[in-house]
Image 1: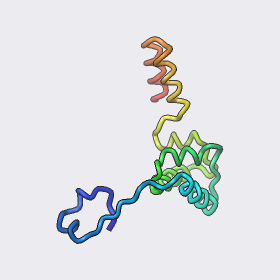
Image 2: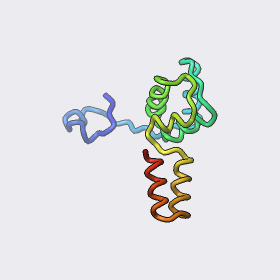
Image 3: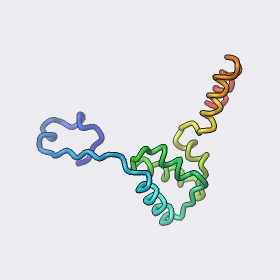
Length: 119
């Protein structure tokens, strides 16, 4: 049996099981497996795309595979921008732009820029 939330498993089952907790994988081990899967599946990651996947997954190989699978449904050559688009996360460029307008522009300009990026 495998689960993410031990508290959701009834106590009768918990008492009969041994818990194993696994920490996050290293970036190197995730990168090796990611490249191996890409080769086997005939996928090409764009520049910095594998770094983005590794960063977003935070050492969770299931997240890596889910992100890769979601991107591969549409693209065989996966650019870094599509990784952020598929995951619904803001790209580093968007974060930099949001920070810039929040610190350098007036409220109305910052709000309109933020809403444009959000859309």
